[in-house]
Image (tube, rainbow, N blue to C red; front, side, top):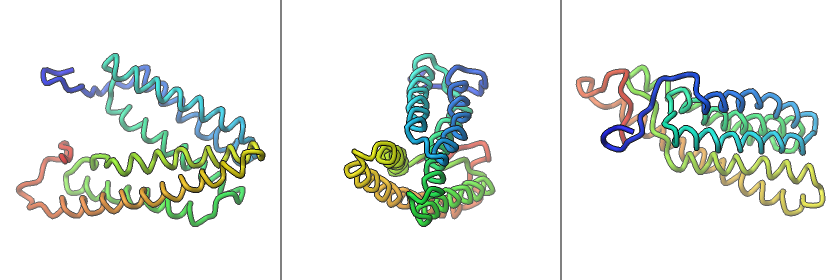
Length: 205
């Protein structure tokens, strides 16, 4: 930590948390294939292993001051890719309708466009909004719950409604957060040129 008690972010590449994040990324295609071929129970085990590694990489990064810029990129990327893999796999099997895939993916594509726009105006990425975090959490729970209903038909009458509740609520909040990001992007790019930060600065909120 620095003198102000804030955790410092390093540019190191080879750290234990980053290695765990890379392992999580490598598990994403394995997870996707297992879902597509209908091995939902094994897919759930892979997801559990990924979640455990996610917990440990965050704990190690904070406890041993190994927070890095790469880690801040890889950790949320792995979460989003697991969500996307579950969404694509379950959609391919007809368990989830295509419109939900379009709703979620189109929001992520919008954020990519906003990120490019901000970079062109000399800004870093927008701070993550708490609604975005909660929406991601809802989706991260929704698809495993739906997979659980597929793996164990005896619990499907309970798991399916719960999973769909998380999925629909998560998609709604996902776009709500997206609208907030869009409004913030439009606000900051209207700041007069002489008041804009350099490209290396990040947005403050």
